[in-house]
Figure 1: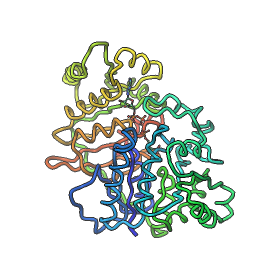
Figure 2 (figure 1 turned 45 degrees about the vertical axis):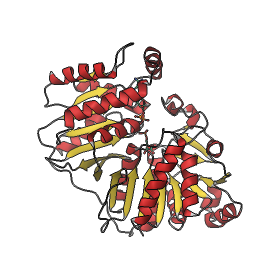
Figure 3 (figure 1 turned 180 degrees about the horizontal axis):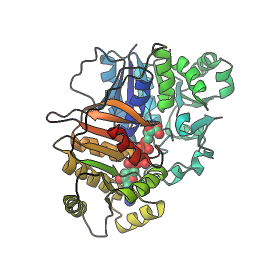
Figure 4 (figure 1 turned 90 degrees about the vertical axis):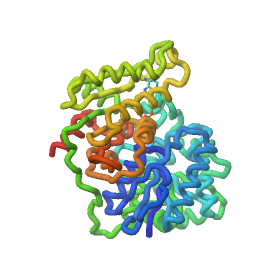
Length: 417
Ligand SMILES: Nc1ncnc2c1ncn2[C@@H]1O[C@H](COP(=O)(O)OP(=O)(O)O)[C@@H](O)[C@H]1O
Ligand SMILES: O=C(O)[C@@H](O)C(=O)COP(=O)(O)O
């Protein structure tokens, strides 16, 4: 049974592929829809889209194209991966994408569960917690693109869908009555059902149910539960060894303004040469790129460089006042140019922090697929991107809110092991 997955951003896609690989599924991670691919030895395919924060129609259209490609590639079970903090707005894009995928597969009552206990995301009575806080009381309320102001996921998803959204409470799951309850939801014509899960055992139970139906959705925690049901019980992690990074460049490019990345960047700035980016009033992104290139040219390349636009909510607000015309998109483009300047000709090791930022960087570098390597922290592996010419690029796409405070330091230590 081959699993076909669509992820709505690039860090989410590596997180998902990392979980599937750690359950023993031989997983291929593709950026966009490939022209062709040999899937002979592949158990799971993840297509990464940059569809989280685009217009809902475009997200639905791209996801449908990916779903059709996965079907034709022999996948029989499908998974839609979104953020464990349910990043979306009242317009979408979780609801519109779910509806279009469900319609294409002819299914109702799709499970939606963003729980990922390894990173503190749990769902209880349909409410999403980040650590010990409700979602709307967590730092996600200040996200620059998708501020999350409501923790009641039934309500949140209902605002994004035409069909009705229901709830599968933990009590029913724990009593082994999920299949029966879901049959009733399907009979009632529900489009999606938010499922509770507060631990990996809940996700294993939910995964057993989801492995038997065509479509499920959530973060990488539920995908791991599904992989657990699909993989042989004695399977071990299916990931690639890291090749030598070589003597070439190392850099951290951070565009995430999430709390974890702010702490990580602060610590790394004490250790490595660092450049904080900002857009002054009246300045063009090209001028910022030129300044940053000058700075890079003056650095020795024997230590990682940190280049970041990471900022506190107050700084983001001030930045938007100084540069009201799309500062977020501009920083994505600037960091993508930095990646191209440093890594276009292959080789080296690059960490990118932030989902949208990763999408911009990977697209600028023209990477088509990567292999999953060893895990650094929950949800964040090193990956290996083969290039047409020269040595591969070692790449980490770090979700904004993932990783310990010393993540950036720890990631390089992995390469020295
Ligand atoms: N100083 C800043 N001011 C305004 N927007 C910023 C700033 N720095 C980064 N951004 C933008 O914030 C967004 C962060 O999103 P993303 O990269 O997905 O991070 P995360 O993984 O934390 O969600 C990006 O669009 C990025 O360009
Ligand atoms: O599920 C998660 O939290 C991550 O896999 C993810 O999607 C993170 O997105 P960003 O925070 O935008 O990097």
